[in-house]
Image 1 (cartoon, helix red, strand yellow):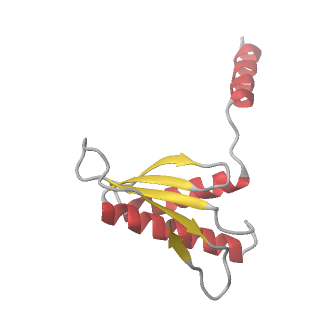
Image 2 (cartoon, one colour; image 1 turned 135 degrees about the vertical axis):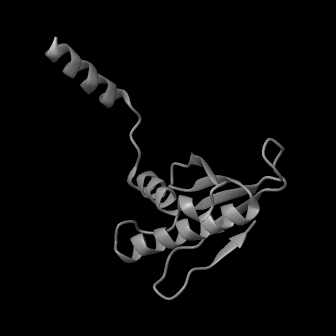
Length: 120
């Protein structure tokens, strides 16, 4: 019986989707930055490690900024080569209402002195 349970656990773990290094870094960044904006929700982690956040405007921008700083630290430490190609933040007016607006950000690669990003 014990062997059967162990086999079931191993098969379940083997079938679970695996995150890439960049996706794992984004997940770790979100978990570390989650307290910066309680309404911010990580909706999607893109293949390149980019992310989609939804929540109240102030909250999502604080979490987004924190996550970018987390990525910058990781890049300086050599854990990831550069920032994700893009990420989006979507402010919502109030709980249960449609998003107020959406902004997509294309992030530049990290340098030791500064990072620039532009909205599109």
